[in-house]
Image 1 (cartoon, one colour):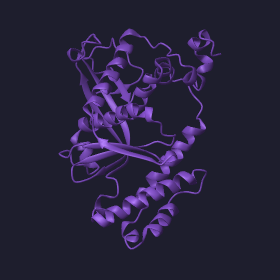
Image 2 (cartoon, rainbow, N blue to C red):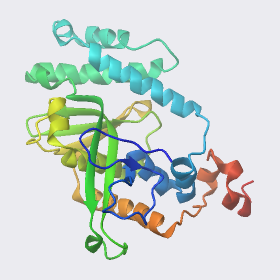
Image 3 (cartoon, rainbow, N blue to C red):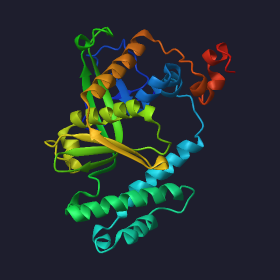
Image 4 (cartoon, helix red, strand yellow):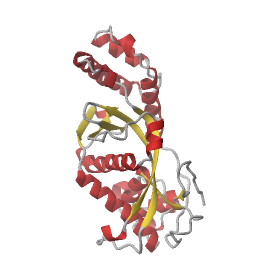
Length: 298
C-alpha cells in the first residue's frame, strides 16, 4: 500500500483505502481523491480499481506524451516571458517573440496557436492598461485540502458514516482580474461540445480544492484567500477553442455526487466494468479485464 504524507495535515492519505478503518484511528490513512481519479471512476470503475487501487501499470500513449510536452512548454513559457520586452512590440512581433519561447518539437503547430492567442490577449491587456494581470498568479502549482463528507447531506447515496478525505491537484494556470481568480485548464485533445459537462466538473474540483486549501499554503504562493474564484475556463489549442464562464453551483453539486459515489464504491467493494464499445477498445487494461472478455471485446 502506498501511503502519502503532506506537511500541515494530520492525516496521511492513500488510494489503497479501506472504508472499515475507524475515523478515530489516526494511524490509518484517509482516502485520496484527485481530479484524475474522479475522471477515471466516471470513465469506468473497473479501470479505477486497476489503476488506483491495484496500481497495475499502463503504457504511456502518444496523446499522453504530447500532453506532457505541451503542459511543460506552456509552464516554461509563462516563467520566462518578459512583459517589459514585449511592451514595445506590435502584434506580429509579440507573436514571433512568444513562439520563440516554445521548444522545437513535434507540437509546433499547437505552440503557434498558443502564441497567436496569447499575443492577442497581451495586446488587449496593453490597450486596457492591465498588463499586471497578463501572467498567471498560479502556474502548474499543486494544492492540497482535507474536507469532511457528511452522511446526512447525501440521502440518495446512503453512506455508513461521515468521512474525512484528502483532495490533491495541480492547477494548470490561474489568472486574476478585478473580480477574483480564474483557473484555466489546458487540454491537448480536440474540443467537442459534449465535453463541456465534464470540463465543468473538473473546474468545480479546482474550486473545491482552492476553497478548502489551508491559508498557509495559499499565502506561501502569494494567493489572497479573501478573493474568490468567480469564473473558470479551458483551452483546447488543437481546436483553437478558448472558453471562460462564471463558476456554476450545479457543477459543484455534480462533483460532490461523484465524490460520494467513490466512497460508496469503497464501502461496497464494488468496481464494476462500464461497457462501451468506443472507450473499452482504447482502454490500457482491456487485455486483463475479465468483463471485457465476457462482453466479447477480447
